[in-house]
Amino acid sequence: MLQENSEFLGRQSSDARIAQHARRLSDQLQTLSERMFPPTAQKALKTFSSTEAASLVGVSDGFLRALSIEGKGPSPDLSDTGRRSYTLGQVNQLREYMAAAKPKDAVSYLPHRRPGEKLQTIAVANFKGGSAKTTTTIYLAQYLALQGYRVLAVDLDPQASLTSLFGIQPEFDLSDGDTLYGAIRYDDKQRPLKDIIRKTYFNGLDLVPGNLELMEFEHDTPTAIHQRKTGAQDIFFRRVGLALASVEEDYDIVVIDCPPQLGYLTLGAVCAATSLLITIHPQMVDVASMSQFLLMTSDLMSVVREFGGELNHDFIRYVVTRHEPNDGPQAQIVGMLRSLFAEEVLTSTAVKSTAIADAGLTKQTLYELPRGQISRKTFDRAVEAIDAVNREILAEIQKVWVRS
Image (tube, rainbow, N blue to C red; front, side):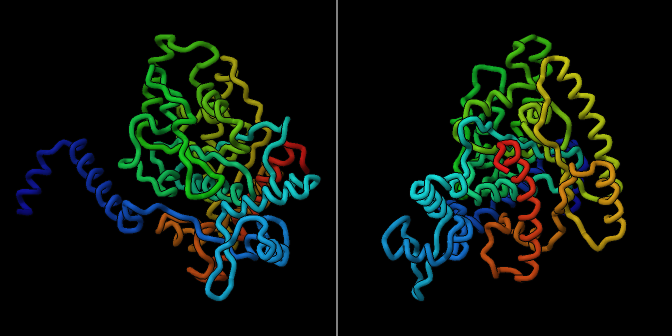
């Protein structure tokens, strides 16, 4: 039998063999996904203790307790021991309650965009895979949602890792047109982005999923350019921005996970973005690759500018990821980057942590994982580092809005 299989494989073309491998792997992933999340089940976010909820809202635990006793605001879940817990949706209801009760301090409780504050669109990019681009994207999007912002996460990577982390299996759970491609394609099958956006289990955080369909935009664009199917207003590098503009009233911040290559999708995201985050793994081979990425990006952006593209970003920041602070060579590289780019390298770094990897095994982040499921010391250290990075990025956004 083994010999027959070997002979059969010898007769198969490479593309057929790879397709067979892809089907086997997809089927296995679907089986694993159904074990973790049965077909009738959906991912759900943990609840927050009254202390955690009070911290998120910006009030004291005693104040929340008094509200609950008086029957004001959302009713928390009570355990057998009398402990109160809140869903993220209820935390956001508390924010709305406090904003209405104290209108002078409304923005501190409910930080949505105010009139005159433009939508912030942040593209997370790097030419090289393995730079924690998707991890940076999802942790930033979830952090912003936890702070009370209305967030849209966009998966522009055909590999769709971000989509998978939200509990959606790209091969099985999406149909034609269910990605951003459906809103930016060139034919009459184009759909409104509002119809593509999906609510997630993370209150305040919506998703535009991705899958291999996104590659169609890379294939279609040269033909569209050659056949002059688009005008100056909807040329390829403006299409992502036009799609996002159709839903901008619903969100404060958009976070885009770009593909790990410089194609039409990445250029569209860069042109749509108000700000750029470039992830860096502090290894010399990765930094050398990033040098080429920056040179190529600069060249392509200059061509886009010649054709009328607007490329004035509010800020560009480099995020050091998978950082091992006690590693000598990494410390030298981080020092070199700071000497070259100064304040454009975030002060905080995303440390390499087994806690992040362990959470990822069940398609979760540390923001989703109940505290105590893994080593508390490891958990706290990782969350502290992630929070510090995200706080810096949020501070940059608030500067643009002239809030700080």
